[in-house]
Amino acid sequence: MSTTNPLLMLNNGVQMPALGLGVYQSAPEQTVAAVQAAIAVGYRLFDTAAAYGNEREVGEGIRASGADRSEVFVTTKLWISDYGYDGALKGFDGSLRRLGLDYVDLYLLHWPMPSDFEKTVGAYRAAEKLLSEGRTRAIGVCNHSPQHLDTLIDRTGIVPALNQVELHPYFSQPDVRRHDAELGVVTQAWSPLGGVYVYQPNDPDEVKNVLHDQVVVSIAERHSKTPAQVVIRWELEHGLAVIPKSVDPSRIAENFGVFDFALAADEIAAIDALDTGVRGGPDPTVVDASRFPFAIDNA
Image 1 (tube, rainbow, N blue to C red):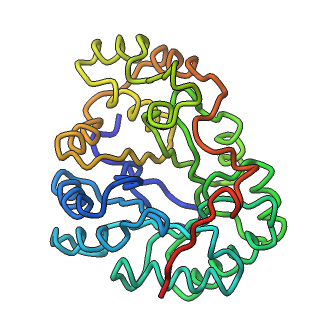
Image 2: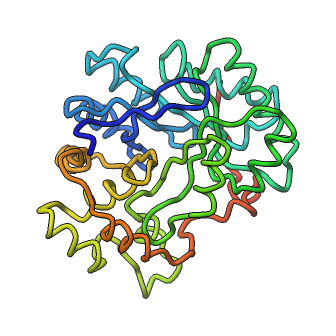
């Protein structure tokens, strides 16, 4: 059992904290304080994106905390409106300017675009250039299926360091995790507590909340932990990177309090068995600019 936030080794030798703070849907006016609160309790990984509208505040929070830049791992993502080689370079410059940083630790493509995969390939080639120049320490992707990954690698020759995907007990993506592992790619969970099922339910009349699932609740009671802590611990036990989101200082601290207990094999198996195979978020096979038509202002 690890009693501190474990470091995961990316395939290029860069180390990354396993547990970090996500800021998806965190209002800009709340993000600075959330980042400061997270650093105060031990977080050193922060995951933002051009599309989240809070890169600037993530950078401000890091600087205001007084933490040394070298001790903080910052991830941001390129939005699909900036895909293509030249667009990606401009998009990166915009992100770096908003963050107020000299480099990022991990730069990700936010989605595959199967309907225009040439632009996805072009964007990834631009990310390779940024990596070679030291402007990002590692590059990767989000929401890539095994087929998407294989095609990207075949076209570019560079294996992503990380694949960030929707992953929680109700949609645990065993095939994606297995394929990522075979390639040496770290799998990172977005919506790790299953919030996408709650806030964007497929059926508003039948909302499923994994934190209310009796299997998870019973395990939490057994360990005198919260359901959220149990789910995060389950993901860490599987060797995943995890980025729960919150702007509530008490919840931020709670989500980090997962390094003083371990789950038994039968408990892990019981949570594994909750998988429904049904995603809560967008289907990556149909994501394109028509589904998400907004563009990033990189001026």
